[in-house]
Every structure is written in C-alpha cells, then in structure tokens.
Length: 182
Image 1: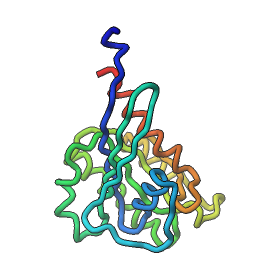
Image 2 (image 1 turned 45 degrees about the vertical axis):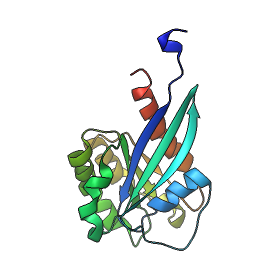
Image 3 (image 1 turned 60 degrees about the vertical axis):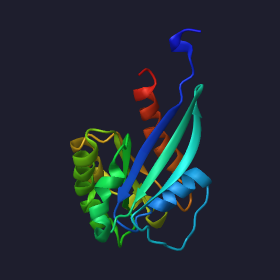
C-alpha cells in the first residue's frame, strides 16, 4: 500500500463564537445530536461537543468549542481559542438581537485573527425562523463576508434545522480538503 493510499484520521477543533444568546449552543446541539431546547441556558466560559464524521475513507473527529459571548468571559477566550483549525461566527437575525450581534462580527473576527491567525471562518446568520424571508437584506452581510474574506455565509435555524447541516458541512469539508494531503 502506497503512502497516498493509507487511511488518514483527522482531529479538528472548531471555535464557535458570537454574542450571548444568538444560538451557538443550540446550533451545535442541532448538528451533533439533532435536538433543540427552547429554554436559554447561558454558557459559562466554554463547553465543547465531540462529533465523529466519516469523509471518504477518513475518520474525522470534530471538537466544537462553544465560547461564551458575554463580556464577563472575555478574559478567558484567548485560552479557549488555542489550537483552533477553523471558526464559526454566529449572529442572530431575530429583530431584537440583529443590530448588536451583527455589529460585533468584526470584533469577533479580530479576536479570532489575533489568537488563531489566518484560519478559515464561516458566518452563520441564525434564527431565520423568526423573520420573514422577504424582510432579510443580505447586502450588508455579503459586504462583510467579502471584506473579511470569510469562507461563506449561511442562514440557519437551530430550531427548525434549516440550513444547519449545509453550514457545518461547509467548514468541515474545507478543513478536510485543506489537510487531507498533508
């Protein structure tokens, strides 16, 4: 068996960041367990979820690090970011939250760049189940994705599952492609 035919296994740490209450934990649970809980429980510091996936013949072990978005946990973040191979920045489309969570995307991006370097980043616009699709103006979002060179932007709903699988797969497949020949 040649070296290129050998099966490779991968371990990827993916940091999930964004303001408190935008649905980071719910998105991870929807993707890894298929479940959704309506009640909000604040993440204290960070928590991680492990998920195993198979891509081609490779076993891919994913660790999603759900980082608390509240300001009182900011001093802990640099430690939690260490070793991240990719990041997901989440903002909320819900009318009460969109202005703040959208405005903070740049800050989250700068934080990731400062502590993780130039890793792939995707943007999730969550809670699309709470807005009318015709009311969504994606022009600002597309501008920030282009300006900041994000891998992509995905509209998601942790509650309904809409867009969740596709969004997570985008970052996972990008990582796999990036590392499979190394």
